[in-house]
Length: 288
Image (cartoon, rainbow, N blue to C red; front, side, top):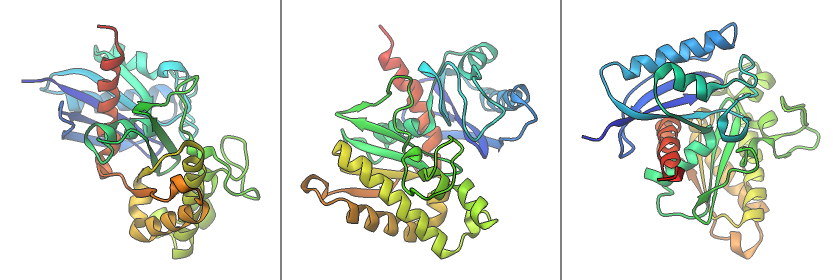
């Protein structure tokens, strides 16, 4: 019997871990809030969560999808929305404490890998997967290859400027998609959690997400976009309809007319299946 994969999702709101099979099926999962006084406490919380999943099972390795940015090969992570971790060596610390090989990548890039492995992009060679959650991130696949960039941070669609007069983003710029359409920005604007956002806020978020998508699509000739994340799923079909209509209005080139935008097919499990796909991808890249 094939050994499973320990999958870990590091997000601004919660830390999640799961046992994922070699066929991309989530068999056991658990999560805790991303809350701690400092980086070491947060790491220890994550470690306990992983050990809970590993109790009584064998795995061949661990894949991690983490909010970014990060340094080359995920050696250090500095998630904008997790201030406890700055230049934090999560991959090596997890490997040492769990006694497992660990592969780590950006969480949205992980979702892109997962959708390409067992999801809606399994037969696609060019697509964008993005997460609209507490923050906003993306993963790009071109010509069948996940784009990494110089330090592994390619795909940060959340930091495309979509509103020139918009508020300051945590990255230091102004009017970023993450600053006007993410869960955190919506909460700042309304004083309410995204689940209670009024219709006009949902529509505004959909407009800006669609505008950002159009920029990527026009630049890179991508014809499939898959959107995941708690905010996107919570907003549902009205949000998706607005994203589609806005993107279409900004995409006037002949090669964009067949653009398809949909929710990530792996739904809420997309980050965990994606984390497992990070491990699978690392095996394929390792010298035999």
